Image 1: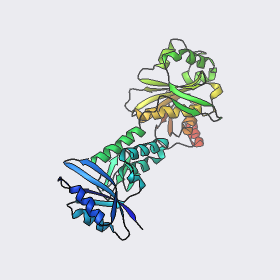
Image 2: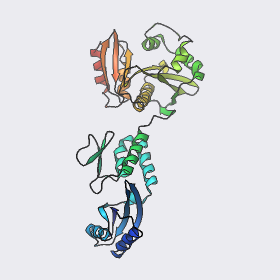
Image 3: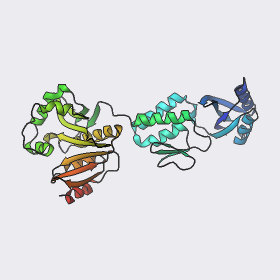
Image 4: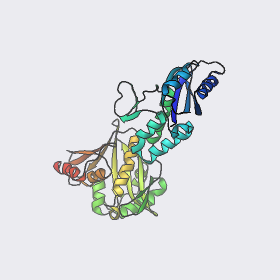
Amino acid sequence: MTTTWRLRFELSDSPGALARVTVRLASADCNVLALHVIPVPGGVLDEIVVRAAPGVLPADLVEAVRSEGGKRVGITRADLRDLVDQPTAVLRAARMALTDPEQTADALRQVLAADSVTVGEAADGQVQLGEWAARRGWAPFTQVELTRAQALLDLVDAPAPSMRAVISDDGAALVLRPGADADEDAVAALHSRCSMRTMFNRYHSGMRTVPRRWLHRLLNPPRGTTVLGQCGDQVVALGQLIHTGTPDCAEVSLLVEDAWQRRGVGAALLGALASDARAAGFTELVAWCLPSETALVRTAARAGLATTTRREDGLLRVSITPRGRALKTPEAVEVAEKTR
Protein backbone atom coordinates (compact mmCIF):
# COMPACT_ATOMS: atom_id res chain seq x y z
CA MET A 1 0.00 0.00 0.00
CA THR A 2 1.40 3.42 -0.97
CA THR A 3 1.72 6.17 1.62
CA THR A 4 1.86 9.94 1.13
CA TRP A 5 4.42 11.89 3.14
CA ARG A 6 5.22 15.54 3.70
CA LEU A 7 8.91 16.42 4.10
CA ARG A 8 10.33 19.79 5.10
CA PHE A 9 14.05 20.51 5.04
CA GLU A 10 16.75 23.11 4.54
CA LEU A 11 19.19 22.93 1.61
CA SER A 12 22.33 24.86 0.86
CA ASP A 13 21.82 27.66 -1.64
CA SER A 14 23.53 26.01 -4.58
CA PRO A 15 22.36 25.34 -8.15
CA GLY A 16 20.64 21.99 -8.64
CA ALA A 17 20.43 21.11 -4.92
CA LEU A 18 16.65 20.65 -4.95
CA ALA A 19 16.77 18.78 -8.27
CA ARG A 20 19.25 16.32 -6.81
CA VAL A 21 16.89 15.67 -3.88
CA THR A 22 13.97 14.93 -6.18
CA VAL A 23 16.14 12.59 -8.28
CA ARG A 24 17.25 10.76 -5.15
CA LEU A 25 13.63 10.39 -3.99
CA ALA A 26 12.64 9.11 -7.42
CA SER A 27 15.38 6.50 -7.22
CA ALA A 28 13.87 5.44 -3.89
CA ASP A 29 10.61 4.70 -5.77
CA CYS A 30 8.82 7.89 -4.68
CA ASN A 31 6.60 10.12 -6.80
CA VAL A 32 6.87 13.86 -6.04
CA LEU A 33 3.32 15.31 -5.95
CA ALA A 34 3.86 18.87 -4.72
CA LEU A 35 6.64 21.31 -3.91
CA HIS A 36 6.55 24.48 -1.82
CA VAL A 37 9.29 26.98 -1.01
CA ILE A 38 8.86 28.73 2.34
CA PRO A 39 10.85 31.92 3.02
CA VAL A 40 12.58 32.09 6.41
CA PRO A 41 15.16 34.53 7.81
CA GLY A 42 18.43 33.96 6.00
CA GLY A 43 17.05 31.68 3.29
CA VAL A 44 14.23 29.28 2.49
CA LEU A 45 12.82 25.93 3.55
CA ASP A 46 11.78 23.40 0.95
CA GLU A 47 8.70 21.25 1.39
CA ILE A 48 7.89 18.21 -0.74
CA VAL A 49 4.84 15.95 -0.75
CA VAL A 50 5.70 12.48 -2.04
CA ARG A 51 3.87 9.21 -2.56
CA ALA A 52 6.12 6.36 -1.47
CA ALA A 53 5.93 2.82 -2.81
CA PRO A 54 5.07 -0.05 -0.47
CA GLY A 55 7.98 -0.93 1.78
CA VAL A 56 9.56 2.54 1.73
CA LEU A 57 9.92 3.74 5.34
CA PRO A 58 9.96 7.32 6.63
CA ALA A 59 13.58 6.80 7.70
CA ASP A 60 14.44 5.95 4.07
CA LEU A 61 13.00 9.26 2.89
CA VAL A 62 14.82 11.25 5.57
CA GLU A 63 18.08 9.52 4.68
CA ALA A 64 17.55 10.27 0.99
CA VAL A 65 17.17 13.98 1.71
CA ARG A 66 20.11 14.09 4.10
CA SER A 67 22.35 12.34 1.59
CA GLU A 68 21.93 15.35 -0.71
CA GLY A 69 22.77 17.88 2.00
CA GLY A 70 19.34 18.36 3.52
CA LYS A 71 19.29 19.65 7.10
CA ARG A 72 16.59 20.05 9.76
CA VAL A 73 14.54 17.36 8.02
CA GLY A 74 10.99 16.88 9.31
CA ILE A 75 8.46 14.35 8.08
CA THR A 76 4.76 13.68 8.69
CA ARG A 77 1.93 11.91 6.93
CA ALA A 78 0.19 13.99 4.28
CA ASP A 79 -3.37 14.04 3.00
CA LEU A 80 -5.16 15.48 -0.01
CA ARG A 81 -5.26 18.98 1.52
CA ASP A 82 -1.48 19.12 1.24
CA LEU A 83 -1.77 18.80 -2.55
CA VAL A 84 -3.77 22.04 -2.80
CA ASP A 85 -1.83 25.27 -3.35
CA GLN A 86 -1.41 27.25 -0.13
CA PRO A 87 -3.62 30.29 -0.96
CA THR A 88 -6.51 27.97 -1.87
CA ALA A 89 -6.06 25.94 1.30
CA VAL A 90 -6.06 29.08 3.45
CA LEU A 91 -9.17 30.46 1.75
CA ARG A 92 -11.00 27.18 2.31
CA ALA A 93 -9.99 27.16 5.97
CA ALA A 94 -11.12 30.78 6.37
CA ARG A 95 -14.49 29.96 4.82
CA MET A 96 -14.89 27.05 7.21
CA ALA A 97 -14.13 29.24 10.26
CA LEU A 98 -16.41 32.05 9.08
CA THR A 99 -19.27 29.67 8.34
CA ASP A 100 -18.95 27.96 11.70
CA PRO A 101 -16.75 29.66 14.35
CA GLU A 102 -16.79 26.38 16.28
CA GLN A 103 -14.43 25.06 13.58
CA THR A 104 -11.83 27.78 14.07
CA ALA A 105 -9.45 25.40 15.83
CA ASP A 106 -9.63 22.92 12.97
CA ALA A 107 -9.14 25.72 10.43
CA LEU A 108 -6.03 26.88 12.29
CA ARG A 109 -4.74 23.32 12.47
CA GLN A 110 -5.08 23.00 8.69
CA VAL A 111 -3.42 26.34 7.96
CA LEU A 112 -0.51 25.56 10.28
CA ALA A 113 -0.28 21.84 9.46
CA ALA A 114 -0.27 21.55 13.25
CA ASP A 115 -0.57 18.43 15.34
CA SER A 116 -3.11 20.14 17.60
CA VAL A 117 -4.75 23.50 18.28
CA THR A 118 -6.48 24.03 21.62
CA VAL A 119 -7.84 26.89 23.70
CA GLY A 120 -5.56 28.02 26.52
CA GLU A 121 -2.12 29.26 27.41
CA ALA A 122 0.75 27.81 25.39
CA ALA A 123 2.88 25.25 27.21
CA ASP A 124 6.40 24.11 26.34
CA GLY A 125 6.57 23.17 22.69
CA GLN A 126 3.50 25.24 21.79
CA VAL A 127 3.03 28.72 20.29
CA GLN A 128 0.39 31.24 21.33
CA LEU A 129 -2.04 32.74 18.81
CA GLY A 130 -4.60 34.85 20.61
CA GLU A 131 -6.59 32.47 22.79
CA TRP A 132 -5.24 29.41 20.92
CA ALA A 133 -2.21 27.23 21.62
CA ALA A 134 -0.76 25.33 18.65
CA ARG A 135 1.66 22.41 18.70
CA ARG A 136 3.64 20.78 15.91
CA GLY A 137 6.23 18.15 16.62
CA TRP A 138 7.42 17.23 13.12
CA ALA A 139 8.81 20.68 12.23
CA PRO A 140 9.03 24.14 13.88
CA PHE A 141 6.50 26.76 12.82
CA THR A 142 7.85 29.41 10.48
CA GLN A 143 7.05 33.11 10.82
CA VAL A 144 5.24 33.01 7.49
CA GLU A 145 2.91 30.29 8.80
CA LEU A 146 2.25 32.12 12.06
CA THR A 147 1.51 35.35 10.20
CA ARG A 148 -0.89 33.46 7.93
CA ALA A 149 -2.66 31.93 10.93
CA GLN A 150 -2.94 35.32 12.66
CA ALA A 151 -4.47 36.77 9.49
CA LEU A 152 -7.07 33.99 9.63
CA LEU A 153 -7.91 34.90 13.23
CA ASP A 154 -8.10 38.60 12.32
CA LEU A 155 -10.57 37.72 9.58
CA VAL A 156 -12.75 35.61 11.88
CA ASP A 157 -12.72 38.32 14.57
CA ALA A 158 -13.10 41.21 12.13
CA PRO A 159 -15.97 43.68 12.61
CA ALA A 160 -19.30 42.25 11.54
CA PRO A 161 -20.58 43.20 8.09
CA SER A 162 -22.59 46.39 7.84
CA MET A 163 -25.78 44.45 7.05
CA ARG A 164 -26.84 41.20 8.70
CA ALA A 165 -29.90 39.12 7.93
CA VAL A 166 -31.78 37.48 10.81
CA ILE A 167 -34.93 35.42 11.13
CA SER A 168 -37.36 35.97 14.00
CA ASP A 169 -38.70 33.08 16.06
CA ASP A 170 -41.84 33.01 13.94
CA GLY A 171 -40.01 33.10 10.60
CA ALA A 172 -40.06 36.81 9.73
CA ALA A 173 -36.99 38.10 7.90
CA LEU A 174 -35.24 41.21 9.19
CA VAL A 175 -32.09 43.12 8.35
CA LEU A 176 -29.79 44.59 10.99
CA ARG A 177 -27.91 47.60 9.64
CA PRO A 178 -26.23 50.82 10.76
CA GLY A 179 -28.46 53.83 11.30
CA ALA A 180 -28.13 56.95 9.12
CA ASP A 181 -29.53 60.47 9.05
CA ALA A 182 -32.01 59.38 6.38
CA ASP A 183 -33.65 57.10 8.97
CA GLU A 184 -34.97 59.92 11.18
CA ASP A 185 -38.58 59.56 10.02
CA ALA A 186 -38.49 55.76 10.33
CA VAL A 187 -37.04 55.97 13.86
CA ALA A 188 -39.66 58.56 14.84
CA ALA A 189 -42.36 56.19 13.55
CA LEU A 190 -40.81 53.32 15.54
CA HIS A 191 -41.16 55.34 18.76
CA SER A 192 -44.74 56.31 17.91
CA ARG A 193 -45.70 52.62 17.71
CA CYS A 194 -44.18 51.80 21.11
CA SER A 195 -46.38 51.68 24.20
CA MET A 196 -45.85 53.98 27.17
CA ARG A 197 -44.43 51.04 29.12
CA THR A 198 -41.85 50.24 26.44
CA MET A 199 -40.85 53.91 26.20
CA PHE A 200 -40.57 54.17 29.99
CA ASN A 201 -38.43 51.06 30.23
CA ARG A 202 -36.06 52.47 27.60
CA TYR A 203 -35.85 56.12 28.61
CA HIS A 204 -37.01 55.98 32.27
CA SER A 205 -39.37 58.88 31.73
CA GLY A 206 -43.05 59.24 30.91
CA MET A 207 -42.73 60.76 27.44
CA ARG A 208 -45.10 59.49 24.75
CA THR A 209 -43.00 60.39 21.72
CA VAL A 210 -39.31 61.11 21.25
CA PRO A 211 -38.46 64.79 20.67
CA ARG A 212 -37.44 65.49 17.10
CA ARG A 213 -34.13 66.99 18.22
CA TRP A 214 -33.17 63.62 19.73
CA LEU A 215 -33.34 61.74 16.46
CA HIS A 216 -29.97 62.87 15.16
CA ARG A 217 -28.23 61.84 18.38
CA LEU A 218 -30.05 58.50 18.40
CA LEU A 219 -28.75 57.78 14.90
CA ASN A 220 -25.30 59.35 15.40
CA PRO A 221 -24.43 58.90 19.09
CA PRO A 222 -21.17 60.53 20.21
CA ARG A 223 -18.45 57.90 20.69
CA GLY A 224 -20.83 55.15 19.62
CA THR A 225 -22.82 53.35 16.95
CA THR A 226 -26.47 52.61 16.27
CA VAL A 227 -27.87 49.45 14.70
CA LEU A 228 -31.43 49.30 13.34
CA GLY A 229 -33.64 46.26 12.88
CA GLN A 230 -35.73 46.63 9.74
CA CYS A 231 -38.54 44.51 8.31
CA GLY A 232 -39.80 45.62 4.92
CA ASP A 233 -39.90 49.40 4.95
CA GLN A 234 -40.34 49.69 8.74
CA VAL A 235 -37.67 50.08 11.42
CA VAL A 236 -38.90 47.86 14.26
CA ALA A 237 -35.92 47.91 16.63
CA LEU A 238 -33.01 50.13 17.59
CA GLY A 239 -29.83 49.30 19.50
CA GLN A 240 -26.94 51.50 20.58
CA LEU A 241 -23.35 50.83 21.64
CA ILE A 242 -21.68 53.83 23.28
CA HIS A 243 -18.22 54.10 24.87
CA THR A 244 -18.58 55.01 28.54
CA GLY A 245 -15.17 56.61 28.91
CA THR A 246 -14.06 53.64 31.01
CA PRO A 247 -11.47 51.54 29.16
CA ASP A 248 -12.87 48.34 27.63
CA CYS A 249 -16.46 49.19 28.67
CA ALA A 250 -19.40 50.33 26.55
CA GLU A 251 -23.03 51.04 27.35
CA VAL A 252 -25.66 49.12 25.41
CA SER A 253 -29.36 49.88 25.02
CA LEU A 254 -32.25 48.34 23.09
CA LEU A 255 -35.67 49.45 21.92
CA VAL A 256 -37.98 46.90 20.28
CA GLU A 257 -41.51 47.90 19.39
CA ASP A 258 -44.25 45.98 21.21
CA ALA A 259 -45.44 43.95 18.23
CA TRP A 260 -41.91 42.53 17.76
CA GLN A 261 -41.13 41.73 21.38
CA ARG A 262 -40.70 38.09 22.50
CA ARG A 263 -39.89 37.06 18.92
CA GLY A 264 -36.09 36.89 19.20
CA VAL A 265 -35.48 40.30 17.66
CA GLY A 266 -33.94 41.77 20.81
CA ALA A 267 -31.62 38.78 21.21
CA ALA A 268 -30.45 39.06 17.59
CA LEU A 269 -29.87 42.79 17.98
CA LEU A 270 -27.98 42.38 21.25
CA GLY A 271 -25.89 39.59 19.72
CA ALA A 272 -24.95 41.87 16.81
CA LEU A 273 -23.97 44.67 19.19
CA ALA A 274 -21.90 42.24 21.27
CA SER A 275 -20.11 41.12 18.11
CA ASP A 276 -19.32 44.73 17.23
CA ALA A 277 -18.15 45.31 20.81
CA ARG A 278 -15.72 42.37 20.63
CA ALA A 279 -14.33 43.69 17.36
CA ALA A 280 -13.82 47.11 19.00
CA GLY A 281 -11.97 45.55 21.94
CA PHE A 282 -14.66 45.99 24.62
CA THR A 283 -14.71 43.35 27.34
CA GLU A 284 -17.83 44.56 29.18
CA LEU A 285 -21.21 45.94 28.16
CA VAL A 286 -23.35 47.79 30.70
CA ALA A 287 -27.07 48.43 30.54
CA TRP A 288 -29.39 50.21 33.00
CA CYS A 289 -32.89 48.89 33.70
CA LEU A 290 -35.68 49.45 36.17
CA PRO A 291 -35.24 47.15 39.20
CA SER A 292 -38.46 45.28 38.34
CA GLU A 293 -37.54 44.83 34.66
CA THR A 294 -35.72 41.57 33.81
CA ALA A 295 -36.33 41.47 30.05
CA LEU A 296 -32.77 42.51 29.16
CA VAL A 297 -31.27 39.76 31.33
CA ARG A 298 -33.45 37.19 29.56
CA THR A 299 -32.55 38.70 26.19
CA ALA A 300 -28.83 38.41 26.96
CA ALA A 301 -29.29 34.77 27.98
CA ARG A 302 -31.06 34.02 24.70
CA ALA A 303 -28.22 35.72 22.82
CA GLY A 304 -25.71 33.45 24.55
CA LEU A 305 -24.20 36.21 26.70
CA ALA A 306 -23.44 35.88 30.40
CA THR A 307 -24.68 38.61 32.76
CA THR A 308 -24.28 39.82 36.32
CA THR A 309 -26.51 42.40 38.01
CA ARG A 310 -26.53 44.74 40.97
CA ARG A 311 -28.63 47.60 42.32
CA GLU A 312 -27.08 51.02 41.80
CA ASP A 313 -28.64 54.48 42.18
CA GLY A 314 -32.14 53.03 42.20
CA LEU A 315 -31.63 51.14 38.93
CA LEU A 316 -30.55 47.65 37.95
CA ARG A 317 -27.05 47.66 36.50
CA VAL A 318 -26.67 44.76 34.07
CA SER A 319 -23.11 43.81 33.16
CA ILE A 320 -22.86 41.72 29.99
CA THR A 321 -19.81 39.81 28.83
CA PRO A 322 -19.57 40.17 25.02
CA ARG A 323 -17.86 36.79 24.79
CA GLY A 324 -18.74 34.01 27.21
CA ARG A 325 -21.04 31.24 28.23
CA ALA A 326 -24.65 32.29 28.60
CA LEU A 327 -26.64 31.86 31.76
CA LYS A 328 -29.76 29.78 31.39
CA THR A 329 -32.86 31.89 31.36
CA PRO A 330 -34.27 30.75 34.74
CA GLU A 331 -30.92 31.39 36.42
CA ALA A 332 -30.64 34.78 34.75
CA VAL A 333 -34.07 35.78 35.97
CA GLU A 334 -33.24 34.55 39.48
CA VAL A 335 -30.14 36.74 39.56
CA ALA A 336 -32.22 39.74 38.59
CA GLU A 337 -34.88 38.90 41.15
CA LYS A 338 -32.31 38.88 43.96
CA THR A 339 -31.25 42.44 43.11
CA ARG A 340 -34.72 43.92 43.51
